[in-house]
Image (cartoon, rainbow, N blue to C red):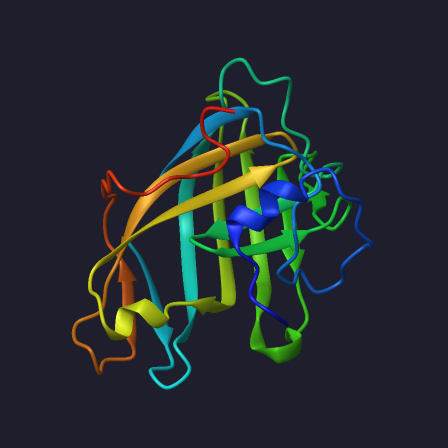
Length: 198
């Protein structure tokens, strides 16, 4: 499946999509207007140095919605994870609620072409007004790590019209190592995220 540029996604924000069963790279169908934040815990992954694609495993990051949000409804709204130029969509209804509607999960099949969301879990902490988010995504474009390290990439979790956003450092021990880590946030003045300020 061809790579989708985030800039191109903005032009398709209101386009309708068929229901996806494999959380492949697709344009979002909702426009985020309530911008929150993500708080990261160091994460790990691996990459294929020949193809430049990687797998990332994120565990228990904190998603803090904007306090002015009109509500986050993972069981009813499309959910999207975006890192740099890659976007992985779970269509509305693909997150399954449990534990009284406080846990929402997705488990995807082996993605066609090796690109897609394998699993996703969003846990609501009502007393604290935030969520924890964990996921495993395959086929992320990490090709720039072959010539530039570290990278500073925007990463967002988007649920309907709410997003949590952070710029994250992506790095590897060497230019031949298959190991990848996301150890900290970063600041890249030249980077932009299409949904911020909208």
